Length: 133
Image (cartoon, rainbow, N blue to C red; front, top):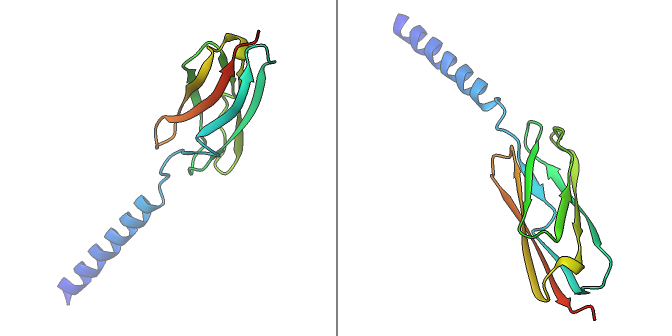
């Protein structure tokens, strides 16, 4: 009888421990609305292109965008550095200046660094840049 009681107490303690571990936050994560932005055909004499790129904080703790890198000086990004609560939507404001882009097929990668458990996310910008003359 005593052995059975000890077994039940141990089992109950393990179940409580598993329940506590299961309820701990897993971390922040990010969900992108897409991974490729196709700007079509642009001329080097065209105006700057402004893109509002939404993303979702989908973890169980707030997400923080820590850095955004681009592979070209023709592309700039503005973003909020404040923690974004889980379930809320944020925006990357992307500006592409065709006058600074090389002529021809244009592929540029934007790397989004954050506190997301899924790591760095990449967004590809693509376009066909024509000479502005």
